Image 1 (cartoon, rainbow, N blue to C red):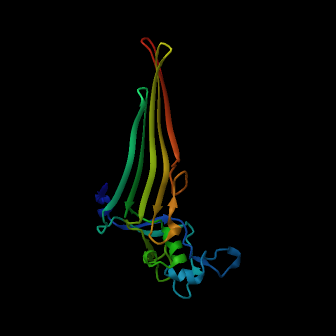
Image 2: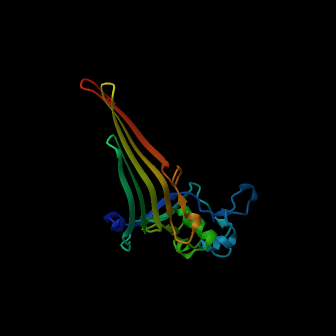
Image 3: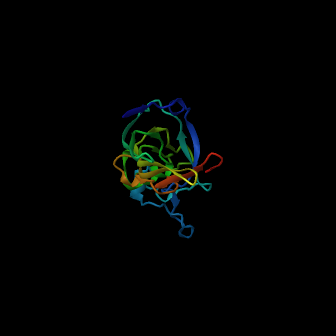
Length: 239
């Protein structure tokens, strides 16, 4: 099954402007005073990838508030997200008392709408020199990202893909006993994969969220289930 989602009004037409983001410019720092331990996190060669010019490495002041400029907003050049969904399932009734079902599903969304974190842009540019990220960094003539007109372009864009895969189970069993009916119902879900590729060709930015909880992943347990028991007679009901 193929599904397409067009960018919404906010994603396309939100006004753009400079705002502050909190974090670190890994290529800012002062190497003149060894006692401050404020050297840039990357070498001069790596920092040249991020827009520094020769002679600026070790001479760019860090923001004391850890705040830097970013350009945020929507983009009219966004393309539609495209999702491919595959499902396979079965239903069985081994007896008149038992029903079971299982469904396998796989959803992959390509070109999802989002934006990279500013530190991801700086660090990955420094480490790889990838022009897709390095072109988003616009330093001031002095090499700063918080003084003058320096900033990182964080406008909404189409990124790589997201893929989520799992299996859903359900079963119910009915047995007459103790002068009434006893029914058991099970609903369960097994998460097999929850993968995000942010930028094609840069595996270091990929992350898997199945069974994890982190800054990039909200709680995504691999196994979730609910078991319910019910007893019912002519004069009594208990769940």
